[in-house]
Image 1: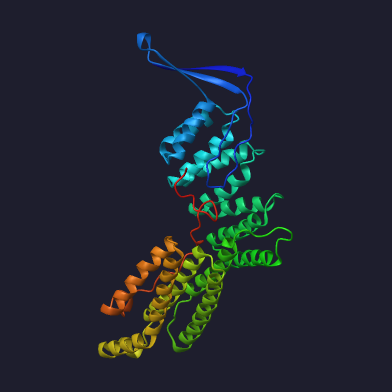
Image 2: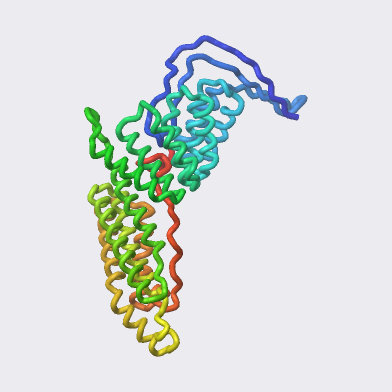
Length: 393
């Protein structure tokens, strides 16, 4: 038999009530001013009856200690228990925020979002709300929920307490949410607005990071890349020439935007842009190889083989260009010490293309299917913004 008894005890105390501020990826501290209610849990019965007395402060510090040891699965049990049983506690805001951080660390983004939702809805005056909104938006990006991410970053842009960096971040990440919804023109307009805001400057304040201006420049390349991927070669000489001209122009325009992103010199987005430049050249090769074969060639196996051999020879420089760009991207990552998803993807693609050139792989085969049109998805961004949460603690 289990029974939960609740006593409300209010004792005078001392100490400050403000939690220690930190970055968005750091767990919140909380200090008590007075003892609130104490819960007593009774387990067993008769001689085996056991009483456990605890309050919100005790649960909070148990969770906080585990979070600082990167034991997030254990920490959330204490935080969630606190937020369920002590809904009026002064520890509630910090407990919800820290639980959400832990769920992010566990890659349980829906659970993280629900804790941020509670914090924003139930504690609108909390000093944690602004950071919770940014991190909630990041969870929504990870969940591919573009509509909710757009609403979150739109709400942030209505606030009057944003620093220049925070305003630029909200503008750029709202553009990311529009991209996720395949609203390419609106995304481009939003991103160009963010770049214009950055170029006007922040008045007496200074921008503290180049992360979001680099992301904005990169995302202009992303919009063009999606347009490039969706142009497919159609049968007919006139149609083929038209498609080739359009794809070539989009490739060069996207490359220009990616190069501008690299010139910002933010390592994260430089690696992303380097990967994309190589990828777009590699995909151009694949799309040409998968284009409709002229009818007079298709019916003759010998002519077909000669046709593809000549085609491979003529467009081989596209793959060689991709290899050179990817090699430089890896060298840059080694020089700057950055290692992220983009570096991993670059290494993987570089190995595949090298094997294809040496041995003749599927990408070089005349029967290789056309790659599907690229979905309009935002680039992978750490859920909290410019800094990856990493191990919590």
